[in-house]
Length: 502
Image 1 (spheres, one colour):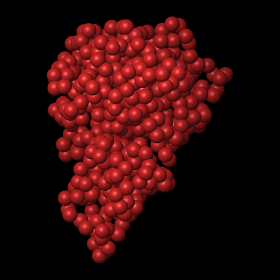
Image 2 (spheres, rainbow, N blue to C red; image 1 turned 180 degrees about the vertical axis):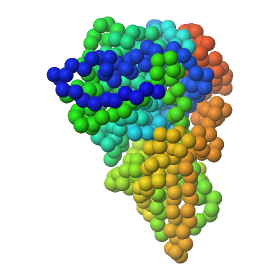
Image 3 (spheres, rainbow, N blue to C red; image 1 turned 45 degrees about the vertical axis):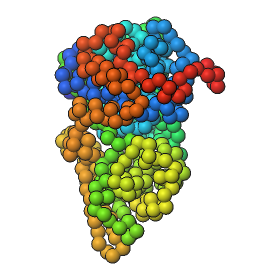
Image 4 (cartoon, rainbow, N blue to C red; image 1 turned 120 degrees about the vertical axis):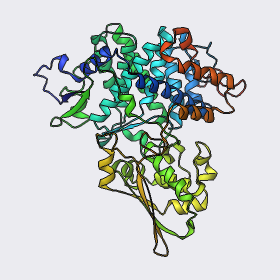
């Protein structure tokens, strides 16, 4: 990997485009020609993962709304939409919109955490939709997805958005643009301008994941993918972009990130090196914020100890800075203790998540969030006894640059009324690469089968998995079949209506 130092420059010092971060990302996209076998295999895993969670969410209201918007934009040579027959095709940026909302709705697909947060699987719906519309092969699709993962993960490693209260889609949009650039074999200049436009438009605040969280949390990444597709289209037609987008005196580092005195280090693959960033990411076994994954596993383990919950005095979760301040009591969000809060808020409340998984001895993507479940008096009582504290050990491990030493878990200290203390610790969630039961292809397949049960015909499941198994060898016609169709009569919101503008 090659180190690139990024900072602001005054306008009077003309920074050559070759020295700008966006141009270096564009060069990465052009140079991505070598595919690593393990990375390609992981692309297939993540396509399965995305389909799993999208199908499980297929009839939730936000997904129906996004699908309705796509239905208003049919296109004879467009892309497919999850749930609908593959013969129905739609303008690719609306298909990407609908599919990405479906993927994000349950907050149950892949994650990468470093200086900032990300769900790099959010890249896939946009890139796949463009591939289907533009007649791309499976091999070029894989290359595009690998570029997108690499760009987003390398940015997440080097630039923290959260400390400046900016949403993580700011790293997603340029990744999608770069990935599409690789897949379409665009030149460096075109990709450069598409990335610049995407970065400029993608910066927004983190309020979408703070306080009372709404379904916009699922829409925001879809919006980033949609605007990146449009940016690439404009750049392909010759439209330029504001530069330098990262380093300019009135650009994002100067006014949205660390300011004129801040220097960021971004490490990117050398020319000729394969893009391996996807191998650093990890998926979720449970439908909740990633930093709660290990806490769910801990809750299930505590359940087996048969602790008298009525005798619990206090529960302290010792964990990282990010867990404490984002989904813990350090957030100072009263909504995280509200039994009537939105699902999106509760999946960002580690206090609720621990209490519920502890009581139930399991976690379910629907049952664990019902109003009946969240209002159970015993849960509310336990929930309000739980607090989080930051521990340097966990924060340091969270930020470790050595994947083998990274930890996203916690130590739970249960103080009983009789003065005894019970401790349960887990460094990483069981499904993590360093966990007790890391996911391989069989784990992804099982997740897909469980989440699609009753919604998808077994023949449809088999066809989808067969296509994914041959992904780099697929031709364009086969790529159009890389869709999951819901059983007849089970898909809600499958017909265009006139409730909106479109």
